[in-house]
Length: 227
Image 1 (cartoon, rainbow, N blue to C red):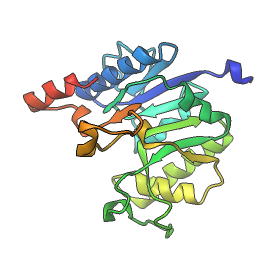
Image 2: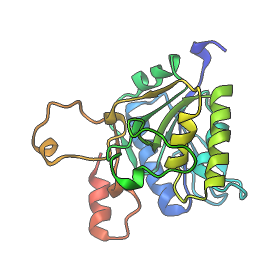
Image 3: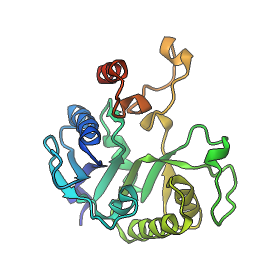
């Protein structure tokens, strides 16, 4: 397949109305800045999937749908997004990374904390920190399919509730062409100084806890203000 004919899109995984709703908000921000990108979601059969171009039902047997669905993306080139994300710019240059790499992600910003240094089977140098798995860019090919299979097997065997430790070890042991893109494409933390003035590049993808479903009325109101 020629590069010109490869399909590009974003993909979400969501359980329940509240999570589908915030995924829909994220998808709307994708289309605002990237009108040519399609959006797909994996969810329950009875969830409202309006606002998405494609929808798929999460198989009941999947132990970790976020991991298990990645290899089944309907696109040749996929940007997986957690539901608590907001897109603020054109993403074509991000997808262009897939001309050279199989899989891309951003480092966990607080990688020095003990919870981000958990070990399952392989001691990995701290200079190879965890990747935040809430924003992952990848191309569909045998290498990434094999990697996702290995990651799923490691996740199931490790018994952790979180998936990033096994992602880190699986990546360390793989020969995948991986690239760590700038943190502005997975903006998790704002320093106080950034809210006043900063010469740093503007965030392209926000990935913030406040964008998750909020039960508190004030937090919900504030979350809906972020654009």
